[in-house]
Image (cartoon, rainbow, N blue to C red; front, side):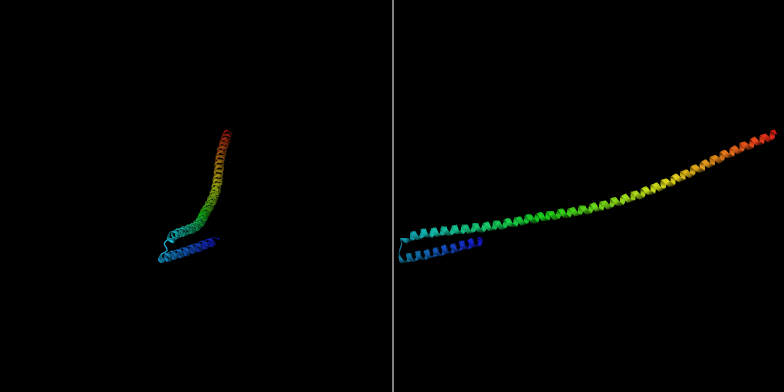
Length: 168
């Protein structure tokens, strides 16, 4: 529709220009023939046609400007869409990076947890070992004390028996 309007405007412009040339030629012809009364009228018609031509040119320029503005608006919209897409891509990349970091942290956490569990097991094993060593030491101590007491009792009994034998 815009193209038809532009074509129509250009055709009207050409028609007016041709009319203007015809008037100019007629005016020149009349001047040459010596007719002076139509010059002013021709000048007025020429001025009118010139104004019409200017109006048509203005309309055409405005139409061209409008088309340019519409194209620029479309380009701006496309640029905005591209910018939004780029921002989304950047956000998606950042999200993926954060996900990777989270996975790495999760793996590190799992490793540390595993190490802690192993350390706990080792500590428990060491504790059990120390407890059993302490129990063994306690048993040995008790046995030694018992043996010492037995030896003392045995000595006492021997001494008592020796005394009894001496008395008898």
